Image (cartoon, rainbow, N blue to C red; front, side, top):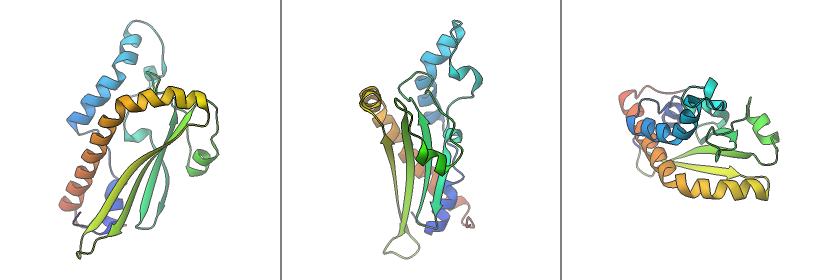
Length: 171
């Protein structure tokens, strides 16, 4: 991207993805079974929550202008995501409930050889603490992985747009 690493990570910290119509459509499809269950009178965790989005993630930490990470804890394979509260990075690291996974969305930056450009990488890491959670998470991940990758590419595009429109972004 044509931006400094600091500008990129500042833009990452402002991401919402709620304005992206394609991402919103994917999230509607993902939540459809649980939302339908609510309409049929079956209670689940989505009853008291707005649509899933990046606001659900907890900032785990930022290391200068090199990296930033967000975490999410839950039973993602459930129709209502089975999310667990997570106050901060320490709570995320300490969490060890069997049958519940931890997911980390990570962005890293390094200056490119060409002046004024930055290499940006994003990856999703998941920790399943036991065989049951791995067994439940694996088919879910295989099903949503292509969409997850597309969403991350769209997030990167949004980061590029933000730094292009607001070159003064700097922490």
